[in-house]
Image (cartoon, rainbow, N blue to C red; front, side):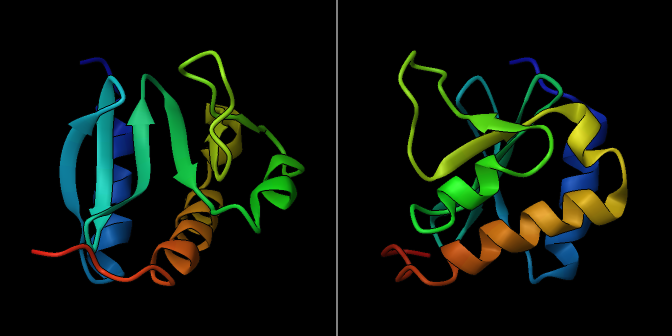
Length: 112
Protein backbone atom coordinates (compact mmCIF):
# COMPACT_ATOMS: atom_id res chain seq x y z
CA UNK A 1 0.00 0.00 0.00
CA UNK A 2 1.35 3.34 -1.01
CA UNK A 3 0.66 6.33 1.17
CA UNK A 4 2.58 9.35 2.42
CA UNK A 5 3.89 8.36 5.84
CA UNK A 6 4.59 12.01 6.70
CA UNK A 7 0.95 12.90 6.14
CA UNK A 8 -0.12 9.84 8.11
CA UNK A 9 2.05 10.96 11.03
CA UNK A 10 0.58 14.47 10.92
CA UNK A 11 -2.90 12.93 11.03
CA UNK A 12 -1.92 10.68 13.96
CA UNK A 13 -0.92 13.76 15.96
CA UNK A 14 -4.17 15.58 15.17
CA UNK A 15 -6.34 12.57 16.02
CA UNK A 16 -4.40 11.90 19.21
CA UNK A 17 -5.10 15.48 20.35
CA UNK A 18 -8.78 15.02 19.41
CA UNK A 19 -9.26 11.85 21.45
CA UNK A 20 -7.75 9.17 19.25
CA UNK A 21 -8.55 7.11 16.20
CA UNK A 22 -7.95 3.56 15.09
CA UNK A 23 -5.94 2.97 11.93
CA UNK A 24 -7.06 0.59 9.21
CA UNK A 25 -5.59 -0.15 5.81
CA UNK A 26 -8.27 0.46 3.18
CA UNK A 27 -8.84 2.17 -0.17
CA UNK A 28 -5.25 1.33 -1.09
CA UNK A 29 -4.02 3.52 1.74
CA UNK A 30 -4.52 4.20 5.43
CA UNK A 31 -7.81 5.22 7.06
CA UNK A 32 -8.40 6.77 10.47
CA UNK A 33 -11.49 5.33 12.13
CA UNK A 34 -13.51 7.06 14.87
CA UNK A 35 -16.23 5.06 16.65
CA UNK A 36 -15.95 2.48 13.85
CA UNK A 37 -16.51 5.03 11.06
CA UNK A 38 -13.94 6.18 8.52
CA UNK A 39 -13.08 9.83 9.17
CA UNK A 40 -10.00 10.65 7.09
CA UNK A 41 -7.35 8.73 5.27
CA UNK A 42 -4.30 8.91 3.07
CA UNK A 43 -3.93 7.53 -0.46
CA UNK A 44 -0.56 8.32 -1.97
CA UNK A 45 -0.09 12.01 -1.03
CA UNK A 46 -3.81 12.82 -1.06
CA UNK A 47 -6.10 13.29 1.93
CA UNK A 48 -9.46 11.52 1.94
CA UNK A 49 -11.99 13.31 4.12
CA UNK A 50 -15.45 12.10 5.02
CA UNK A 51 -17.49 15.26 5.27
CA UNK A 52 -21.00 13.85 5.03
CA UNK A 53 -23.73 14.45 2.48
CA UNK A 54 -24.94 17.76 3.94
CA UNK A 55 -21.49 19.39 3.75
CA UNK A 56 -20.36 17.65 0.55
CA UNK A 57 -21.08 20.46 -1.97
CA UNK A 58 -19.60 23.08 0.35
CA UNK A 59 -16.44 20.99 0.80
CA UNK A 60 -16.07 20.58 -2.95
CA UNK A 61 -15.96 24.36 -3.21
CA UNK A 62 -12.90 24.59 -0.97
CA UNK A 63 -9.46 24.97 -2.55
CA UNK A 64 -7.81 21.77 -3.81
CA UNK A 65 -10.83 19.55 -3.02
CA UNK A 66 -12.41 17.22 -5.56
CA UNK A 67 -14.82 14.32 -5.66
CA UNK A 68 -13.58 11.05 -4.26
CA UNK A 69 -13.99 8.79 -7.26
CA UNK A 70 -11.64 5.85 -6.81
CA UNK A 71 -14.26 3.49 -8.24
CA UNK A 72 -14.84 5.72 -11.27
CA UNK A 73 -18.03 7.05 -9.68
CA UNK A 74 -18.12 9.89 -7.11
CA UNK A 75 -18.71 8.75 -3.54
CA UNK A 76 -21.05 11.38 -2.10
CA UNK A 77 -19.95 12.64 1.29
CA UNK A 78 -16.25 11.93 0.70
CA UNK A 79 -13.68 14.25 -0.91
CA UNK A 80 -10.05 14.09 -1.92
CA UNK A 81 -7.83 17.02 -0.97
CA UNK A 82 -4.66 17.54 -3.00
CA UNK A 83 -1.35 18.00 -1.15
CA UNK A 84 -1.42 21.75 -1.86
CA UNK A 85 -4.62 22.02 0.18
CA UNK A 86 -3.10 20.49 3.31
CA UNK A 87 0.42 21.93 3.35
CA UNK A 88 -0.17 23.88 6.55
CA UNK A 89 -1.08 22.19 9.81
CA UNK A 90 -3.99 24.60 10.16
CA UNK A 91 -5.45 23.51 6.81
CA UNK A 92 -5.09 19.82 7.67
CA UNK A 93 -6.64 20.39 11.10
CA UNK A 94 -9.60 22.14 9.45
CA UNK A 95 -10.29 19.13 7.22
CA UNK A 96 -10.05 16.74 10.17
CA UNK A 97 -12.40 18.96 12.21
CA UNK A 98 -14.91 19.01 9.34
CA UNK A 99 -14.76 15.24 9.14
CA UNK A 100 -15.03 14.75 12.90
CA UNK A 101 -18.14 16.95 13.03
CA UNK A 102 -19.85 14.53 10.67
CA UNK A 103 -18.47 11.29 12.12
CA UNK A 104 -19.41 12.31 15.68
CA UNK A 105 -23.01 12.79 14.47
CA UNK A 106 -23.20 9.07 13.64
CA UNK A 107 -24.02 6.40 16.22
CA UNK A 108 -20.94 4.36 17.17
CA UNK A 109 -20.68 1.04 15.39
CA UNK A 110 -21.05 -1.99 17.67
CA UNK A 111 -17.80 -3.06 19.27
CA UNK A 112 -16.25 0.41 19.17
